[in-house]
Amino acid sequence: MSDRLHALKLQLGFGVDEAVGDTPVDRYALSTLDAAARQTHNAEQQAKDSRTRPKPNQPSRMPSGSSQDALESASAANSAQTLEDLRATVAAFEACALKRTATNLVFADGNPDAKVMIIGEAPGADEDRLGLPFVGVSGKLLDRMLAFIGINRSSVYITNVLPWRPPGNRKPTQAEVAVCLPFIKRHVELAAPKILVLAGGAAASTLLDTNQGISRIRGRWHDYSSPGLADPIAALPTFHPAYLLRTPAQKRFAWRDLLALKLKLQEIG
Ligand code: URA
Image (tube, rainbow, N blue to C red; front, side, top):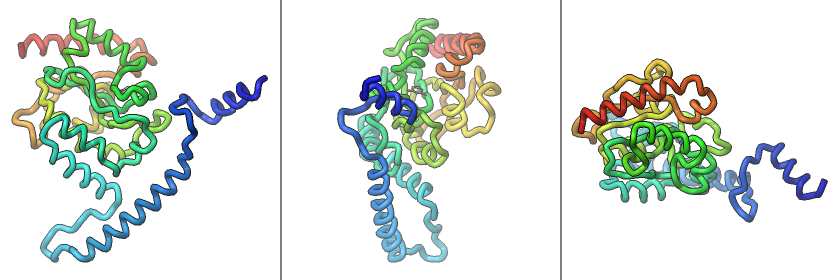
């Protein structure tokens, strides 16, 4: 076996699942730098906090790093007044570690004025490479599902709860979701669709703030509300296309959900 083939097999064994650049990046060195930068930031923040410590009758700051980061993202998200603003705000946001391992920001695709907004969980390898949501195998199935009810990407707006790919497609941590939540909530407020389709358990439980599994809540219409919305939005949780690819027997339920979506679109005209 040639040395190169041998090296490639070794990398596969280590869990490498894609080639993203011509030059290697030492992620361990980056995360050490990152930790050092975070420590300096925290020390500066603590010094600043002690100078501006709230008076006894004022609410105090939340102590943990991730809560602080979530407060930061909430204030950044709420300052965005347009989708372009929001994209720029997310692109400039540094307090989510996923940004540093991702190749591209995956903000959205499709038509921002569409009546239907589809929200998945997080970008995968193909999405990360191209900077667009749902362009890999699950995206192909999503396209076929939309075609089944006579719509396509130009009649929907598509995004994810997380705008950066978790390394190796691992499940996002609760802290990562909490930090990115204000961005997706603001994204929905600014796009203000008539209908939300929540693709998969992660998107559904995060946005509907429920612990119930996707099998229980899929196919039923829920009201999605948030402070920046004039009226609640009709939200339909359904199975994630990646799950349907792994479990084709569940597709019949997804088709039912699609028919419910088609009917709702006809109702709202
Ligand atoms: N899965 C998701 O949830 N989102 C994507 O963009 C791709 C795969």
